Amino acid sequence: MPTVLKSGRVVVTGGAGFLGRKVCDLVRARGAREVLVPRRAQYDLTTEAGAARLYADMKPDVVIHLAAEVGGIGANMANPGRYFFANMAMALHLIEQARINRLVKFVQVGTICAYPKFTPVPFKEDDLWAGYPEETNAPYGVAKKAALVMLDAYQRQYGLRSAYVLPVNLYGPGDNFDPATSHVIPALVRKCVEATDSGADHIVCWGTGSASREFLYVDDAAEGVVRAAEALDEPVPVNLGTCMEITIKDLVQLVVRLTGFRGRIVWDASKPDGQPRRCLDTTRAEKLMGFRARVGFEEGLKNTIAWFRENRARIA
Image 1 (tube, rainbow, N blue to C red):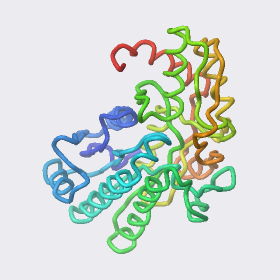
Image 2 (spheres, one colour; image 1 turned 60 degrees about the horizontal axis):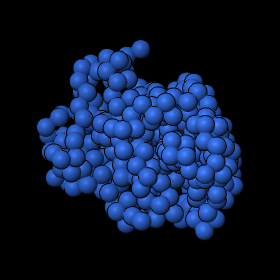
Image 3 (cartoon, helix red, strand yellow; image 1 turned 45 degrees about the horizontal axis):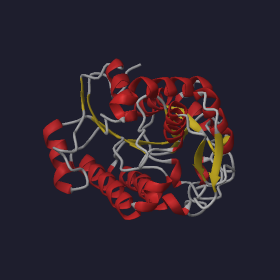
Image 4 (cartoon, one colour; image 1 turned 135 degrees about the vertical axis):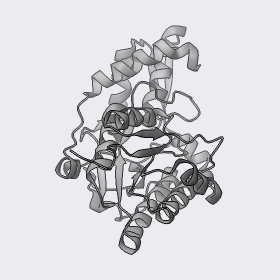
């Protein structure tokens, strides 16, 4: 099937990151002539000059915008201003330069944090505007959602072709395991592995464990992003997920079992739970681009735990 990726020059912002490396591999496998990854040291995409220089130097046909400043609940609470500015500024400048340079297609990766705090489960894309996001990550979520509005406006006024996907929480080998900025699965994996190895008698987990989440293996997420680049021409929001919901308490017990930790689990209810529930309706992704997640949750967790154990010394 001929696509905009075939024989094209594709820029993947954030292409050296967790999801980005997988996306770059798939884009190459789909026949792109060249895959280019701008590095932060050379291109500050939060500035107009940095974004303009990227387009001038790399001359892309397609831009897949994955780059983000992001973290877990703690990082979002500590950096609300920075997370709003950095994510809003990158999208603003990259999309405007796409218009100026007559880009063939722009692919924006959004965030599940854009959904309202009390979105009915499973989340449907039409509910994106039904309320304000959960407070701890609202600045990040609103910035990402604003990019959707910009792409819609630019298509209607300038004819810019684009796609917009909303991946649920990602996990897998190569994730960010930094305790200060990691999301729940890598944070739990690291906590349980280190507690097991040190002989600790307990671990402390944030919140009450009552909140629920859905998780998408990184390889599946990459396939969803690349299919959006191939199949979608309009910025209709499309969920990428598994439609499988698990409470944080059940997640902790599963990670504890898979890592072999034998100690107690202590819940710190003074810390926030975040959004009460997250589970996506993925009907649109299957209908518009034939996407369905393939990696089972326990299989993905086992791969993630094994990767961390093998690479722990390097990333400590």
